[in-house]
Length: 190
Length: 190
Image (tube, rainbow over all chains, first blue to last red; front, side):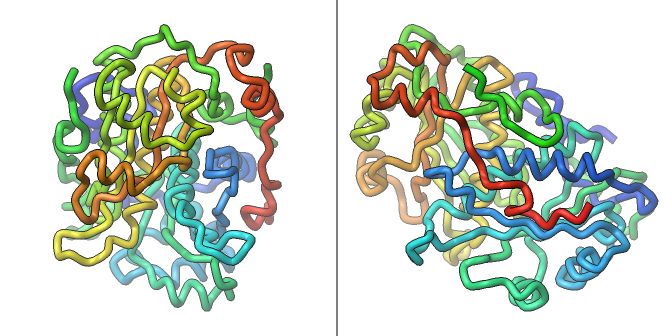
């Protein structure tokens, strides 16, 4: 199954080969070192005024937090994501110290999670981010303070055969990847 | 000058060695291939429902768009960023096709720009993102439609000696990097 990005020039393999599988090996585990590394990658991301407006809750398959994060997923995502090795609830710290909105909190949180993904891929794990989860339930489940806003759930694990999926999900898994044309996202004048 | 991320475990060099310099070589240029690659990296980023809510305006030093992007920077950033090889105005497409807000637009745009940064670093360029710019002026300068929201300006270029900077900026350039502790951003239970 070739899922390599169809780009006009060669990209770094960690970017070209990144995609978001749903078929995870439910026997695969993630080590403390690998977990530390992916969060260190997020930790060292840039952010406006170095505010680092992110906070992660991680569950490892079999533990309580993993079950809690699984429970806030959409019904569709509940079908596949609990086979991952770890689930992460990504929260953005949307208020600054002075109580005002931090306008770049969500953007900066995205910056951090991309680097987490690159490090995970580098260590042989796949990553699939989900916006399909119940944010209010996540806030309540983890008793999140005001200004701690859940923005994504992230599955981290080892990819396995699409045959492990239901027909509906398998069809998505093997579908070709698509993107807008390059000249639709940037003025190419070169 | 050692700016390597001080992490508890070894990170991929593209992550460990990424930082945001302000001293750029004003004779360095960026090729069409390198520019294409960094935008291809952003293009292939993941986003919720594959909505790809980002749009970039790029200027190459010496051209009109570069001058326009320079003109919207804060006075502080105007001191150093125009020495970069390219300047990018990052815009997030904050409205969905149905006219409603896309709640993950900013987050997804951050995901894309991180991958742009990784590809740029891989190709020997440094990247420095700036929130210090006049967003209203950027909208007006580029006649951006409703729902096209400028979120960052990005300098891409080749790092040079901090001695090329004013004393004030040089002091920032050589200062140690700092981040919150790992256990402040994630529940470490391993």
